[in-house]
Image 1 (cartoon, helix red, strand yellow):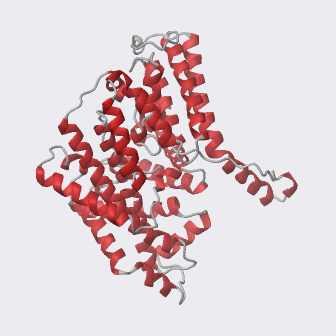
Image 2 (tube, rainbow, N blue to C red):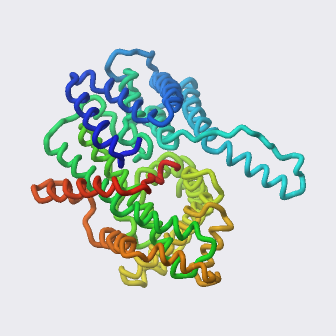
Image 3 (cartoon, helix red, strand yellow):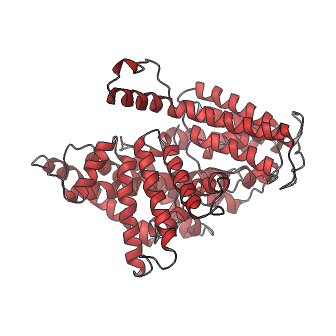
Length: 485
């Protein structure tokens, strides 16, 4: 089930809110868990069984780490002392939690990729007989990249003493399975919501802000991301394109992925507010960044900070010399790329960003950006990001390389390129690109705009929601592209 669907907006969400607020507070988490399992299992109920098994394992290891025995009674254990000694059992429990989640993610996300890469390698060196021609293919469960990261943050936070382990299984299941953030994030750290799982406030102002967040997110998705995505699909799916079409296509994809994912984050934050939870900001106008380093402070903040705190810092961060710092940056960014998808394209995308981060770090404050005016810094950063999006969007590495050639005018399009132009330069699609650009670089962020929901803002939000739902009925193209990551 997706947020941008009539079944969610007109059926699931009203029923979910009604049940959530009708039951006594002590039963709200039970209702929320059950509703989340329905939401998650709408396409494939087997995914729910996998999540339940994973949740039980992570719940048990959390209790072992905290030194508690399993209990279905409410309440929390005492937090471990940060920096204090840990027993061999606690260290083993943490290792089990991390290994189990990485194994789960690795098998379901990278099994097919591993087999295909192995077969390509052995065939390339002339050993076709060594290829594994297996009929067995693994289906990727939705959201597995997100809820495994949630589970690992829980185990690590408890181990570090940053949070108390949950003794109530339903509360922990609620943290893992909460439907607003379940299938496409943001990545919610346990320490950020631990107290909210025990007690939170419900106010009309918070609910109104949640509705506004959801409405603006729906508008971003339906009115901007979808038409921009149609442009990107048309261009990236073409056999040959000229430089102008190539730039139009990558611009369409840059806007699609931004408005698609930031829209989902807005809707997730809004839905959480309706339930009384407050999630952190996940996007901070990333296309206004003035360097790649600045871009990663603004883009998918929940992922970049997760990788920083749970991977980069444990690897040594910048504390073990210059060479180690650059190696850590490269490792984190390549793994971050592979987290998004099982393809060498994603690894290359991450490697390019890692190289840029290292390059900017090596130059220090007196870098080539510092000599440019602010508008030029932003423009140059955006162009670099667009180039890297080619590897993110292209189906294969040869296609990505060919597309980059088109961007710099090295490809010959031929007469068939006129067919692409007839599709992407229609007034509707051009208007969508212009609107996306205006929203990106001139409009306030949803986070700031909704801090105080006035009557005019409420009217604007509800008007955009109404318009989005009308347009939704006419659109056959409505993917949430981050579901595949």
